[in-house]
Length: 298
Ligand SMILES: Nc1ncnc2c1ncn2[C@@H]1O[C@H](COP(=O)(O)OP(=O)(O)O)[C@@H](O)[C@H]1O
Ligand SMILES: [Mg+2]
Image (tube, rainbow, N blue to C red; front, side, top):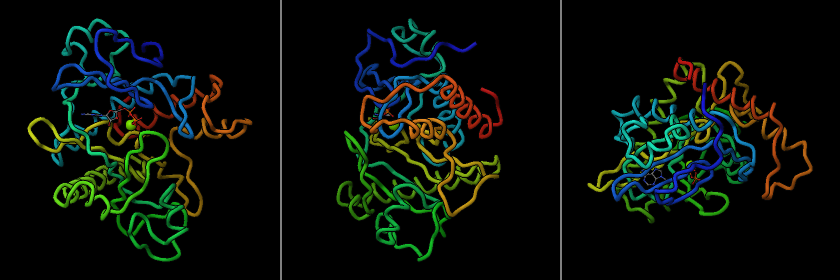
């Protein structure tokens, strides 16, 4: 049996450094953080009041799967997901935290999201229709929505504290971070994406695009942080249903978005609750993504 759904994590004896849309981040000491993936879900940039059972578990287990699989490309921040190996203030809440917690190396986060796109959708599709480019990449004419690009492109975005991230050119990233780090982050992101996408294809999933985050650890080394290649940070499409020329159903949040579109809600917080059938169907989709990608039941 799995633990109850969790909207906010309960550790009172550690300092919360951030509550993100999905994760609660705690300072363990000056070298380690605890990332707790809750069951919060956001849609249209608003956090919903209804939890998605087991979502935090899927995000944690899938990130761990990819960290292991891609460890040869670049080192990552994961120390352990095993509660038994974590410090006492965490173990005290084992029942609520098991399966959804990652002890990680604390880093100084690069203020740029490293997005890689293999297909043209979302904000990339919008930018292309307007300008023929995405983040400074001039693309062939006549591409249709959701079409595979001739080759994957690196399309960084700045991290906005509030609201939408802003797409920037690689040139702009060079001005922000310098040449050396930009080149390293770009090449590493493309390598991670290419390897993951090739593998996912053999499991019947297209990874249309994804976002990585990187940080610098206490030794000055650049490592992969945050979550990796989950339904929240990527667009997964079932390979069997892929049909370019329109938007593809998103693997995870489609039922939630479709339901919210039927309401008379202006997409400003507070977001409305969703019915339990929609929440349960969404849980099933997250679990299915895990199973398809890893070949194992969570
Ligand atoms: N190893 C790390 N060192 C420092 N910060 C990290 C590390 N891993 C993840 N983070 C940060 O923790 C937060 C994770 O919370 P999340 O819910 O994903 O936030 P967001 O709403 O910004 O997506 C992000 O701000 C991410 O940059
Ligand atoms: Mg995040």
